[in-house]
Amino acid sequence: MDDGRAQIIERGVLTAPDEVWDVAVRQAEVIGRLAAEPRVGLAAADAAADELGISRRQVYVLLDRWRAGEGVVSDLLPRRSSGGRRLSRLPAAVETVMTEVIRSRYLNQQRRSVAAVYREVVHRCRAGGLPVPARSTLERRIEALDPAAATAAREGADGARRLRSAGGDPPSIEGLLQQVQIDHTPVDLEVVDERHRLPIGRPYVTAAIDVASRCVVGLVVTLEAPSALSVGLCLAHTVCDKRPWLERLGLEAAAWPMSGKPHEIHTDNAVEFRSEALRRGCDQHGITLAYRPRGMPHFGGIIERLIGTMMQMVHELPGTTFSSAAERGSYDSQAMAVLTVGELNRWLALAVAAYHGQVHGTLGQTPAGRWAEGVAAGGRPATVTSETAFLVDFLPLLRRTLRRTGFTVDHVQYYSDVLKPWIARRDRLEKFVLRRDPRDISRVWVLDPDGHAYLPVPYRMLSRPPISVWEQRAAIARLRESGRAQVDENALFAMVEQMRQITEKAAAKTRRARREVERRSATPAPRAAAPAPPPLAEECADDTPVQPFEVIEQW
Image (tube, rainbow, N blue to C red; front, side):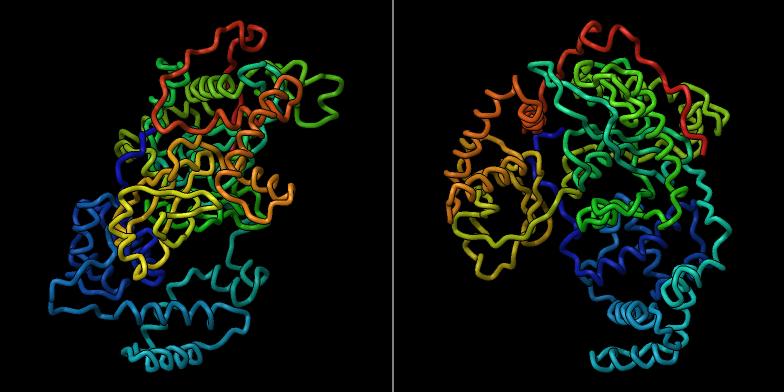
């Protein structure tokens, strides 16, 4: 991972007003489709102009900016006007009014008529001093709505059932990374810590699979429960070249070329998939965030079958917990555990590489072969060169006021000389947007007031050790329990150090203490560390070689 010292450009992902961002997202859908064509004729440009409510010339301007940029939504955000004479057919503010009225007045079970909705549009436009659109314009916007979704909003799920095929068949996916399904699960395996080689519990895995090729494109193992961060880490693993990661695992010879930006990620409805950071991050990178329809679990069948098969393979490793207590029987999972999290990562990487080389029952060929065909037909998917820059777009965000001493976040102060120009005019600035990695809070990423770049700002006291959000919260809770009405930074870090010493002493005795030590050791270093040597074969499971995935999902 990058050392994170350079600034990261922010191009409107969080600073653009919602109505402006929504217009850019809509434009990206149309312009991105046009950009995929080798030549865009007048007829296609006119159709796009009519769909977006802009002129033909503006369609070509947006198309040029999309092709010259990186193919992300922020390439289409409005820029400073150069004084051109031609105006949009329909101002963005009017589009915003119509969108809001359709959402609040039309798409609900009161089932208002188009005439009533149009009257509300007229009222709001006149009240805001905006031009009034024609009723036919509103009707076209309503006709463009997804029929099933609109009917579900107005008549409920039962009313929309007639518009869906029997069983709600998932859409056909053919292109590489056209859809990537993501999900989490606890691993059916007890792992051990690096120091004492004693059990610390079950980790979690977040996996991503490309539907078209059935290739595993992202995989993250953590000791933390699934969260928005887990999703961001899995996406970062998906879009970046995996060779540096494989080298850190000591698997330089392993091949895992399946990487790139997904067009759509498909998830269930868990809370970690609905955060503002994930939504805006996906918008910024042109990734559609789609959710599994409730009551239709087969829409996520591919990733669930993959995870199920992975767990079946894990059941062959020493220390497995199996799928249930009944299946485990008298097997002592903790006594048999031998693999660390790092060794589990190595095993999974090798198992995935073996799976990619085996014929898939549904495809009739290997996933690696299908991927190679897709690359030959459509080119290699776009990857991301800076994992840090990509991950920052998906980190949890905070909003804080700048003070003379910098920023204070949960009793911890952050300061850097880069803040000095802003401190002088802080009374005229709104709250700043901050991003923070929960695994390491020794720095925050601060978005400059102009919204152009994220800058790393470290602890004000640089001698403080890196700690995680979980350690910080536990220390604050301990201080509260001890009767402290006020928590200050010195007391917080003193408590963290005291808790660490207690945990280190107890690590040889309790599983919980060992797990806490391992969670702390997983804190990402500011600079890339040298890759650890691969564990010896005899350190792993009872000399059993890594087995390939024999059966994978057949959806």
